[in-house]
Length: 191
Image (tube, rainbow, N blue to C red; front, side):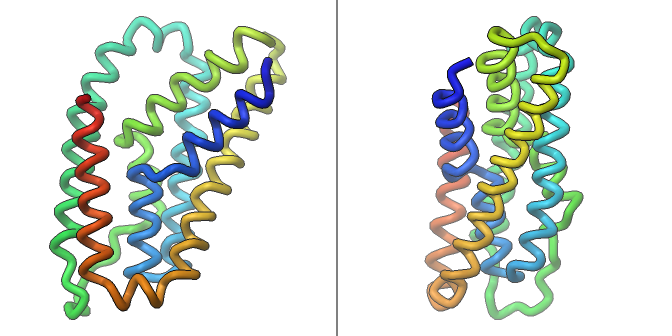
């Protein structure tokens, strides 16, 4: 296994902006780092579960990938557009905004996030299984990838915390920008 390529792929896929990272940044902005970390824990567990499913059902997934991808495109795009609309509609002067960034929502988001689905479907069969079939290598790889994902999510919480004052000062611009990023990601699924 080419460890360098594996690590580069994992770092790029997890640290670059995507639906989960944008929601984490928005959560820090709206509710603070503590709430964002709760969401992050759920997202990390969901990410790990998807990696385990991918590793365990790799051969079966290869035959159903076209159907899975189409379903994920529809559901994921719709959900991302809904999140974009919610971000756009956020009224900073309204104190009754409900907290939707929970452990459960972070967990469930991973199963609707096309970026995560495609990453978890490809990383184990591409970088691990062809080179080492040892029973211990796959679980170790899943744990390592999960840790990288957790680091990426936490980096977005830290980024949001460091720039929270700036983000709050420019609240409407930040919300519109994040909404546009999510909408762009939803549209790019179909390109």
